[in-house]
Image 1 (cartoon, helix red, strand yellow):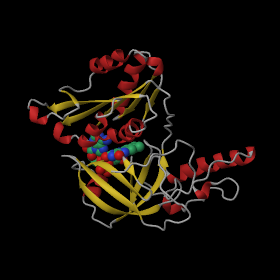
Image 2 (cartoon, rainbow, N blue to C red):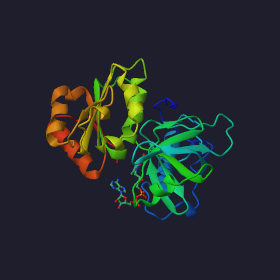
Image 3 (cartoon, rainbow, N blue to C red):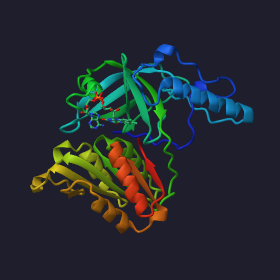
Amino acid sequence: MTTRVSTLKMISNENEDIFDNRPKTPPKESCCGSGCNPCILDVYEKLLKQWEERKKNNILIERKKNVISPTSLNTFVVSDNYKASKDYIFLWLEYKGNINNNRSLYLIPGQYIILRYGSMSKAYTPISWSETSLMLLIKVYPSGRFSQLLNNAKKNDEFEIRGPYGDFIYNINSFHEIIMFSIGSGITAVYPIAKVIVENEEEETKINFIAGFQSISCVPLKKELQNLADYWNFVCTLHISEDLVSDTNQSIHGINIENERLSKQSVYNYLQRNQKPNTTLILICGTDEFNHSIEQWSRENNYSHIHVFR
Ligand SMILES: Cc1cc2nc3c(=O)[nH]c(=O)nc-3n(C[C@H](O)[C@H](O)[C@H](O)COP(=O)(O)OP(=O)(O)OC[C@H]3O[C@@H](n4cnc5c(N)ncnc54)[C@H](O)[C@@H]3O)c2cc1C
């Protein structure tokens, strides 16, 4: 798995440069009408306002030729699709267009894309990417329309992608510790951020990675988390809420396992053990209820540097 280490600078597409190009108006039919967040037409309105503002103030932003764009759809084909765990699959998508003029795929860890097939669109957070391809980790729901479609996707099937979206910006060594709380597929937002930090030799930030799943057999990225646990600054604890672990065969070397749902008490314990709220960042990704509770408990423990991936 190769992860591109992105610079955390403002990234724009060639069609969003301020002097030669205003953002291109997306055709009306590029909105699928299914209430995506963000809708391509809203993104266009926002980028247009930003462009007008920059033009007024004569500000030039760095121009990189990204193969994906927040305001237009680009075709990708499935290059691989395989099981990641009981409920999860990995899906590799390869850019179908020409790669020339230094065009490349630029993503900041934690950013998401909108994947579209026919009139259906859903958001996904790439966990890994190269210059022309990206890898998604997808939870397959028995009655999930899009996740079932992706589960059954075959090599060379075509999907359209727009993005990237997401406003999380991280600066190297800006916190003493980052505590990452996720449940289920929320792991996709925090894992790439943990990886990029842990693999950066210049980083002195510690990562406390806490992820909740129903059972050990559901947990994706086991090997990847074990690899990160070999580094001095990464500690991982998995909270298993339903099929509790009683068998040592289910233990994962280097990873702590707790047989309990992430409760208020356990979250309080993580927060109070840390003791450095002013220099600690809290990252949260899960259901609305989970996000709300963890954010509230963090604030009750005097943490104010909090980012929720929604
Ligand atoms: C910014 C963002 C990034 C995302 N990134 C990822 C990602 O990287 N990987 C990933 O797998 N998903 C991700 N999602 C969720 C994804 O967009 C879809 O919502 C998910 O794949 C389900 O879509 P579906 O069409 O299969 O299910 P739907 O047809 O919408 O739902 C069918 C049924 O599936 C179940 N279901 C669906 N979603 C949930 C849920 N979140 N919790 C509990 N039950 C649910 C429910 O029973 C629901 O009734 C992300 C969502 C957002 C907003």
